[in-house]
Picture: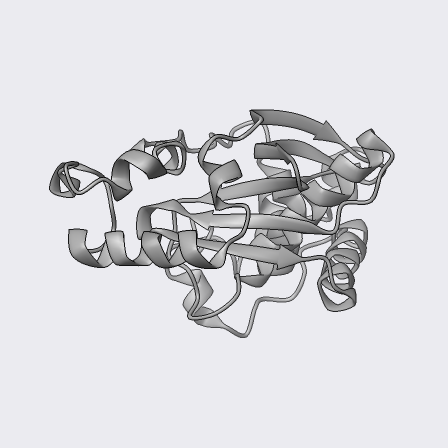
Length: 217
């Protein structure tokens, strides 16, 4: 059983996941800030009377409102996302568990709210893996198929719908295999841009014991 965030890290950087597991007792997860709450205030943010200059949006106010307007036009479930049936729902599936920031009933789907920036199209693979894990867990709990999820880049006004295609499901299963295979520290990522903001950048090259030995297995 893996946390949704574990699988997201497995897709992003398995070595970082190793260190996160190793330091689990000391690691402090960052608290949510006002960017997360933007995802629950879309109606107000679309209102021209709302002063966006006072909101924690990541782009210029006019650009933000245009992006949010495009999201409303493109995403059929936008109104349901504005007023979700439930929020911060703990889900436990067959292989993964964690919190879905929103759960919609029609269509039955979870949503992940991200404080970061969106890619030009689609969603970043680690977030796609996390969203698929949410959908799989929701499907397991409800004993009914869930064929989509949403990723909301709330500070940018961008909402993306994610279908559980064979490719996306494959990414999720690959992340499961990666997480299951971690014993010692995996190879360093070749995409060193990922290292720039990583809290383990200073110790990533240090020789370490295997995870199983650290856990006393």
